[in-house]
Image (cartoon, rainbow, N blue to C red; front, side, top):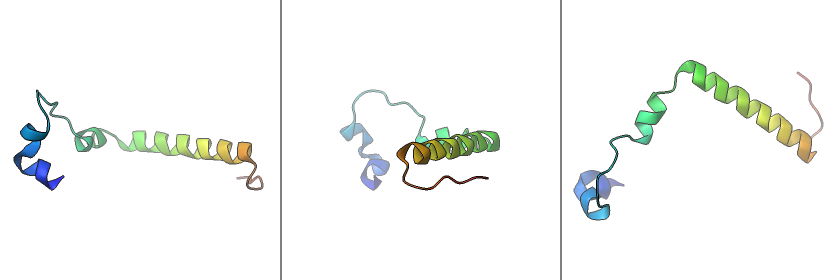
Length: 60
């Protein structure tokens, strides 16, 4: 990546590139977005564990 950062982008990639980066995308997230993702991750993990049956059921 350091080589690409120091001017090799035009040799590595042809055409016009979008100015957006992963950092720009991640900075667009608000605290509310992060909480929603955390909630979805918890629900997904709980469903996965319940479906796989690899751990005893936990209650909150």
